[in-house]
Image (tube, rainbow, N blue to C red; front, side, top):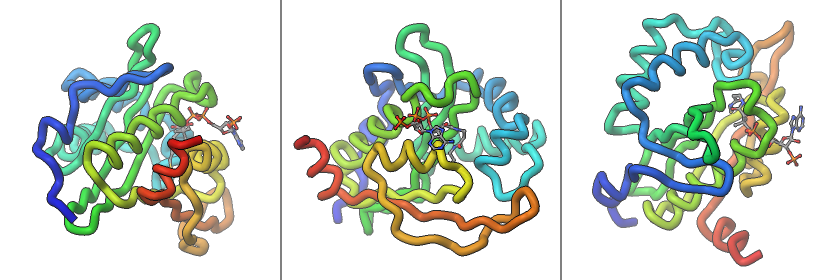
Length: 192
Ligand SMILES: CC(C)(COP(=O)(O)OP(=O)(O)OC[C@H]1O[C@@H](n2cnc3c(N)ncnc32)[C@H](O)[C@@H]1OP(=O)(O)O)[C@@H](O)C(=O)NCCC(=O)NCCS
């Protein structure tokens, strides 16, 4: 497996789609992160701990991960208006094994269910497999997050396992589902 390409190819200025444009994050996006991650519903869907992140925690997360060198994070903007609605990212980029972990949060609830998440994911997968020459993209999602699971399936992710009863929410335990897509599966989908 070749090493990952240089930083410019790694983290492009923008990746354009039909509905959304992925752009590099800018420092002023922190304000939106603080708002998104203080929403209890976003915390419910994305965090092991149900409490929303404090402003300090969001700030640390934003500067160390989102703007950090080891995390390939892109802002999700609507193509028509350029409105910032969310963020998506690869973490644990592993050039030796050709793998990474994918994350996405559309932080504006009125932007859920409009196809933006699926397209952002499709754009990130094309970047992973074509530009970064990766072999595998994995993710984890809580069992109760049906919209996210459906969006991931639409982009070609398949369930490969589950951490049983790994999260306690609303009075019961739920599985954490592990999904992934491999290069040959992604290439096959590009033909149809
Ligand atoms: C998960 C997320 C990225 C998906 O993006 P999105 O733009 O909302 O999703 P899309 O509109 O592209 O696709 C959603 C699909 O789920 C379906 N869906 C919506 N609600 C659903 C539900 N309750 N049960 C089953 N399917 C559902 C939609 O109908 C659509 O499928 P379809 O096109 O076949 O009709 C976005 O909703 C989000 O960020 N949510 C909050 C944070 C989060 O959950 N992040 C993921 C953590 S793993």
